[in-house]
Length: 71
Image (cartoon, rainbow, N blue to C red):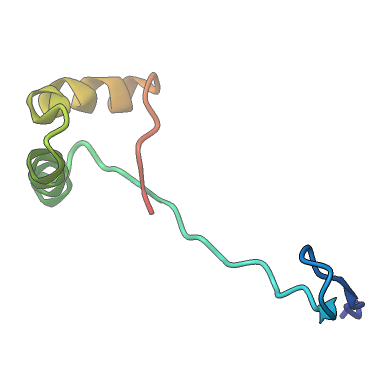
């Protein structure tokens, strides 16, 4: 394990010790999963953004032209 060194913090007050990077898990959106399709539609409705496009995204995800991921 590499040791972390302290560096001056951006405000110039004392030292800043870096924290480890966060881990983010990406899960591919499955256009064949009714649960994934329903969840995507519900999220699009909730945010008011392109809910009417979800069905067309299924073909684009299958073809590899889209790469939608759950975070």
